[in-house]
Image (cartoon, rainbow over all chains, first blue to last red; front, side, top):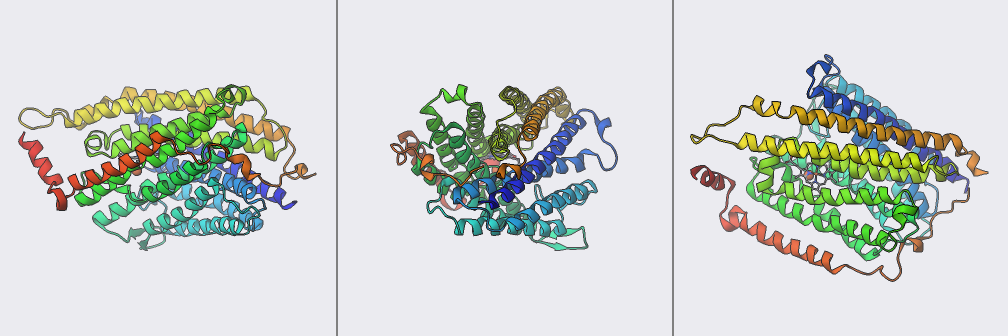
Length: 465
Length: 61
Ligand code: HEM
Ligand SMILES: [Fe+2]
């Protein structure tokens, strides 16, 4: 099984790349959080908020997120398929192309090139590179699954397959555009159609980048770390199919009270609310699994990462659907509530679960133990506290903002000017920066721990012997 | 390192692998029923409700 070693290097390469882009994205996040309350921290023209925000979101979603997804999906895939990747060299090329792609993405966004579609900012030449990258991933995933040496397909494989298919369809359709020069293009769809396609895509970026591949990790690494089997296989399968079915029709909840036809909004809301059930299928399954032996929370340091991660996923998938309701959307839409929601998901669920998975994988690949469980615990508490500060401050100021915007005098005129409502955000934005610093400190402990583990362990080639 | 893949049985809890918690089933079917009601109640073609009318009513209040 020597081929495994080759693949382990690719897995490690993706994890290290992911961490690298994670550092870039998180530091930029800190900077833009300061720019919100200290305009002097905008440095013309490259390092202004307008450009850096997209570098932050793309860097973290595609650099940290997708990088880790590539690496960990391959790790899971090889073990569940009981065979090496079908095309190990292709995976290696994919790793290089991935880093080139993210670099180009960062540079062009800094230069101000954008399609002006959220999470689909990258201009068409880079889109083509990304599609090539994704096809490489798809070829390896499908090839390896088809040639697998274990007949039964564990739930994590289903989630990985869903990710591959859904992202391909979503990304290609929403990026259909008519080029007008090398770095300029126009969306193929216009007006309300453009918005509808964009949010069909945007919501499913959440669904198929921040949910399905992370659930693949959760279902795989929770049993591996704790030694406890998943409570109900049937529940995981039913939740999977209903989740992927429902997710795709919910995007309209981003367009409540817009010119989008009423019935489309309503249908989007119906699927949105239904999504609580499949989401909570995984939450319940996770709780029942660890519920068979809660002492694992103390005896295995990774258990609390997974349980806290799935808890934030559970909160996120109740809060999210609620936000889709008309009565709630009209209060919180366009306010700072939304970044509060977003970061409970990205910091509390995605990053928490991914970091725990990396903690599991790196010592295995390097044939050693984690450098320090104590450092991991410090990391855990810091990112937890940092994230809670972030989310809670944004929820408070978001509700306040929404309420002030809606306040009217008896004659129907607005009670507050926009700037009056903006100024009230400042203290909350400052506290958010504090939360961000705490979160970043936690991530630095994580990186230090991984680095020391790698140094202590054998290199992937040596581990072969 | 001997890493020949996973034993798939180790992932499934034997006694409970086919269980569906009752509370979860209630949630699942309940949300589907609610969805049917909500779609009917807020679709212009079915109930006559529109965003525009609802807005006018709220302004007239
Ligand atoms: C059942 C699951 C979920 C539903 C139904 C949902 C619903 C929503 C809704 C309605 C909004 C728009 C709020 C507004 O602008 O008025 C939103 C925004 C957002 N959510 Fe969620 N959410 C869910 C889970 C998640 C998860 C797990 C994550 C991340 C890990 C996430 C990340 C985001 C992001 C990034 C945005 C911001 C989109 C933008 O740029 O405007 N959501 N979500
Ligand atoms: Fe959404």
